[in-house]
Image 1 (cartoon, rainbow, N blue to C red):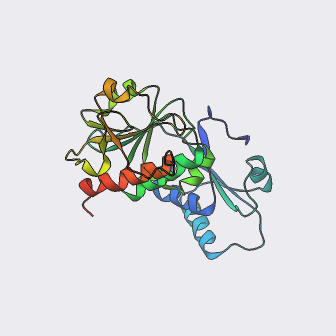
Image 2 (cartoon, one colour):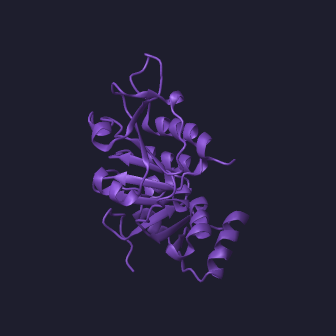
Image 3 (tube, helix red, strand yellow):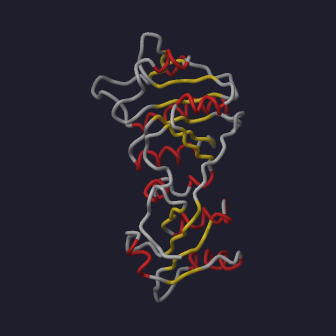
Length: 245
């Protein structure tokens, strides 16, 4: 199979780096199509262990410097896995993180990693949005993406049709918005909804969806928080009501 630069409409993506390949091998080994190894004189013990595990699962390993050049991998990247993308089904009984039109790969990868840290396993992405399977997002997630269910929807209405009965908490400011510290999430199934980095959520979002608007109190020295920071604060707060740890 000929190797090409990553394309959004492709069925395949790439996990670049030994750490990401190890996470993919641990969580979704059947998704791995083949692995590329940069030819070097000596491999470290950690890399040798991953290679051994790959061979035990009969996964093809190809030594090729060209493959790393084609995909623009950094010089210190020694291992890279080609894997099949999957638009997973969301668990209707679990809390969801809903991202409306996120546009930055680094932000999305960081949110995915943070979600895994706080035991949020289901993320809905409303398009148009950055591609969650872009290798930059996969890299920024540090492999956490392989632990989660990621599903894309063309609109919030389409998402709600598949989400099941749940309470929506929309992070935005309107006349009915509550401070984050005033909210108590008693539901097992709820959704934390955050908007685009630049535009946020539409002004009528809460009214149209029946969501409870919430804002994160902050000083007047800045006009807003970075999306990944806001999502992290939201997840940490709500995890206090839903986590058993």
